[in-house]
Length: 289
Image (cartoon, rainbow, N blue to C red; front, side, top):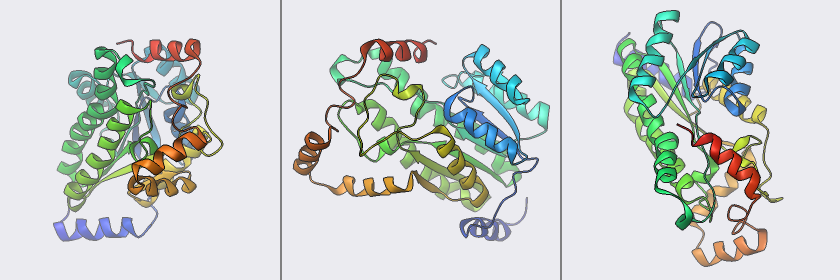
C-alpha cells in the first residue's frame, strides 16, 4: 500500500500529467451498453485495458459486450444490492478493478411543474445518488489497497443551469461538488476522483431536442477520448469540448443578462420545447425500472 508520503508523491506525479498506462488495467463502466459508455469502452480496449460493462438493460449490455469481446453484467445503479453484487462479481472474475467510471445517467427536460414525482425521484437516484453509491462502494475497496481512480461523468449543465433542465442541472451540479470534495478526501490515500463535464452529446439524452449553433452537440467519441486522457494523466476536472470552458463565466453572469442572452440565442427555449414523440420514447425507456 505504501506510506502516506509515498502515496502523496504518487498523487502529485499524477497531477503533473505523468502518463498512467492502461494496459491490463480493469476498468468498470456503468451505463456501458450504449452512448458515451460504449464509446469509452472501445477506446479503453484499444489502449489495452480490460473492460467490464454494466447496464440496466441486460439485452443491450449483453450484445455490446459480445461485440467488444469483453464482460458485461446487468446493473441497477439505483440499488445498493445490485451495485455491490456487480462490483463483487468483477472482483471475483478479475481479482480487482482499477477504475470505476460512473457514467449511467438520464436527462429529463421540460417545465418543472410538469415533472411527475416518480421522474424527479428517478432523476436524482440515477444522476446523483448512484454516483455517490458507486463511489462509496469502489472507494472502500481502493482505499484498502492504496490506489485506484473513480471517474464521475457530470455535465456542462451542472455549470450552466438552463430553463427546462432544472432537476438534471441540480443533479449534475451535485456530482461536480461531490467529486471535488471526495477527491480532496481520498487523494492522500492514493485514490483519485476525476470529474468529466461534457457538453450535450449525440446520444439518446438529446433525442427530440433542438440545440443551438452556440451549443452544438458533440460526438460520444469526443467525450470518450477525454475520459481516457483524464485517466491516463489523473486530470481532475475536464470540460468537453474545451471551448465550453467559456461557460464558467455564466456562473457569475447577472440574471438579467442571462435572460437577455437566453432570448437572443435560444437558451430559454431549447429544453422547454421539443419533439414530443421522440422525447416521450426516450423518457419511456430510461424511466423503466
